[in-house]
Image (cartoon, rainbow, N blue to C red; front, side):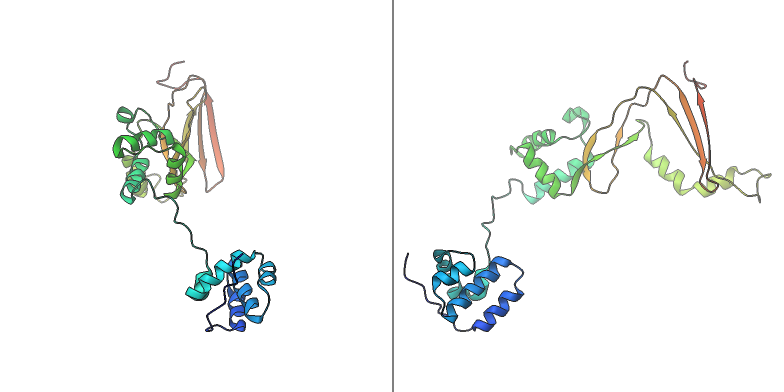
Length: 248
């Protein structure tokens, strides 16, 4: 053990160092300040170090830092870690790929897995990443593995949006003269074909979003039709073995 390093700074009193320790949000920094305060009060290095949960050599190192930088020198300094393998531009491009989804013809998949994205990154950027590293980048970008909502392969999002925006005018146009001026009930109807169906999986998407994915909706068994009126709290349904246009 080398000779004790003297505390050379005199711009902070013992009282001021204890006050700084009381306001410190980091417990380690507070203990270092208190250890130096004990030294200035006349305690031995051994007592000061043990009282603040460190050995004498560690206290010696912190005194060196304090002499050069003052209380600011008692904070931890990270090594910075390994340099990111992907540049900010490449990370942004990764986000674009995930948002757009894979191209089955080019990528050979219908949903992204970490392994698929790792292959795409290697092909585009010539950087080989482990799939766990890809997952870390996805989490950093705000993506999570979420359950998808079923969507018919022939669904038209543009037509759906136009219908929702123009719903009131559409109802007004098709309302018969006999119905005008009378109370109007709006029922919401949907149908389902009960039987064997394709499964949905999880995909990488932004937290809080509701991603969509095509799903085979062909069924063989019973057909269920239901409608509900939220205003009345009423509902009605039909269960049929087949419908017009559907084979038995």
